[in-house]
Length: 401
Image 1 (tube, one colour):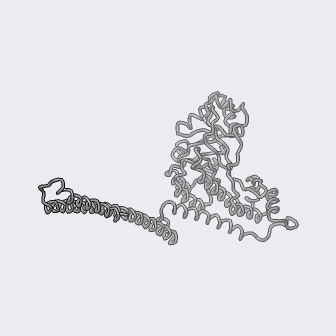
Image 2 (tube, rainbow, N blue to C red):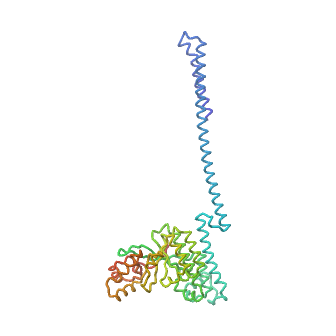
Image 3 (cartoon, helix red, strand yellow):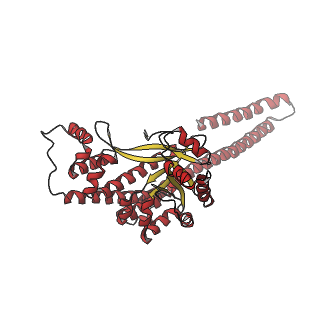
């Protein structure tokens, strides 16, 4: 197409030069024919030179355009090579077991796999310790029916059946998240949520801790089950954090605290997921604070440095070392509404609850009144300027879909 265009241009100025050679003698009778031919030839040569100059400019422009395309392709190839090298480094870091050399996302995967491996080891060790098959439930049933009957008879399960149920829940993603709102008072607007994990059976029923607690404790299964539910709860919150604007309270039991090997791996996992800090508040029972030995306190300090916050619940005594709580980044204390009202009655002071609230507040700790079941209790609390409340009056734990 370009060649045809140039041929057409050459034909035009050649024809123009030929026309000059013919018409000049007619227009200028005194002009010799040889002179007309010379003028026409000069016009032809000048046109040809101009044509060549513009053709070269066009070729240079095309060449520059092609070089730009090649340059862009070279940049894309370089970026692709860089990404490939990075992926190779990630794979190498995982294969060689050196997660410190892996980028952040790969570090997350390594930390998560380690925690899961620890949980599997715990459950497997309990399986090996079982002396034999569990009790006979009667004639053999289909698997689904058997699991459904297990859900209905959780409190009577053998350790083997209970372990089967937990392992099956992990394998088939049957550990669900329940959330109960913690509201800001007096508006009753949900500010936080407490997260509970529940094991779901095939028939859709949920196995709450109260249904397996006794036998699990007798057989030493509470620690691995608590660890599993804690970790699964954190996984679900992590997956849903982009949809959530609130923070979630997650309980860490004394069994998890006493399992230092798992707890250390769990802290490593949280360190690899430090972006969860605004979304998670770890909660401990008051009685378990004494379990925070130097090693545990050191691990919790790691979490605190990452920005994670802590809370206390199951309060039995209002005798707190507020300076220590502040130093250890405890930002919330939950106290049963009945205990608060009893304290108010015992001291005979209408400002007793407000005094407790203000003492915490001065140390940067918010008081949450929990187990609020009726409007009467709420009215008493509002008079004392309690900022947060939790209880069935504001909503029961609901499954997070």
